[in-house]
Length: 210
Image (tube, rainbow, N blue to C red; front, side, top):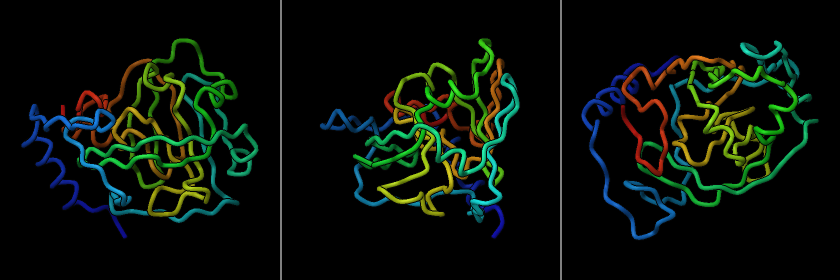
């Protein structure tokens, strides 16, 4: 299955149509502006769900950090953390109390030791996806490189083997099928950011479209 070009074009149109428009506040302050609570876990991607072989998978780290590659087994040996956080999607749904397990970003940074002048990262997915995140947003303390969802390996449709979870940002800001992380000093907008989406994507500020 290839990239879903019709879906991408439709999302670009939505970004243009709803730029600078905002949703209604919710009575529940836990639910960001314009969001609707769901018990489901909708699946959204580019139309590609790559296969994952734990024996051949590699996570590459480079840029303003010594270049390293980690196998899936290397990742599993790192200090693990479990947390439960809400997940917010730019398509107006939120799911409360999603349980993840993985490596806290702050613990991962201690391993890869990027240079002090890094200000952003670019994430790369096995499906060709990219997205940018600022150092400020990554250093919130509850950012996770996840490999388990609800006590099991993240399923294919939800982005195996790894995905970055940044609870205060919309879910598109954490790449599914994560395969590389590039540390950079100058920002580089990613796949959706160059197609009309907000460059930061803070769900609580309703930064949907730029």
